[in-house]
Image (tube, rainbow, N blue to C red):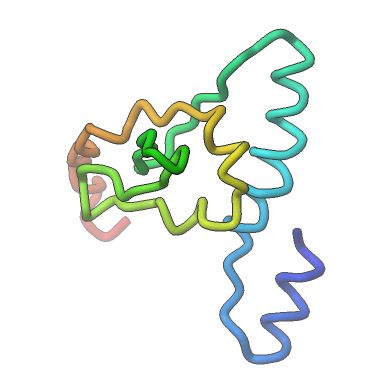
Length: 104
């Protein structure tokens, strides 16, 4: 994950290592490990929504548009996404209180 990020950054591009990490690590190695342990689904905290369509699973934004994370999942194969659960899809992220002290 680090080497491609560093090369892209050095070349003046704006890399998105999270998208590659989700494809290779979370929905690659982690999903394989979960399946080996008997899991049939992998739940993540992404603010994204997965819906079953006539063409199979489709990725959509979560209900909280200000927290959309569906773009981080665009490189994940749909077959792997079909094994995912996104419990945050219909939730709004809670508002965090301001830091204290205010200058922190």
